[in-house]
Image (cartoon, rainbow, N blue to C red; front, side, top):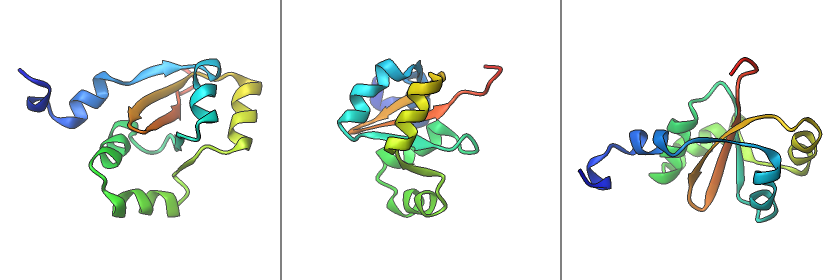
Length: 102
């Protein structure tokens, strides 16, 4: 089975992983970190980015459910060092805080 035979969401799900601020900081410095609210499915958001579903992405951005990580986000992550889930939807690195009990 080739990568093209695997559904996008399945492939993205296998590419998610936990990340800490120390690993994420270099991506933030490049301006490619996108924060995803916990109420959304990280893999579904990543799939919309990969598919260039501009209408859906803009809907989330307008609702402030998805946004490019800010200096404020970076300071918060640096201070708390939370576990984040991440997935790459090139050129973006989408991140979402893991639930506290995860």
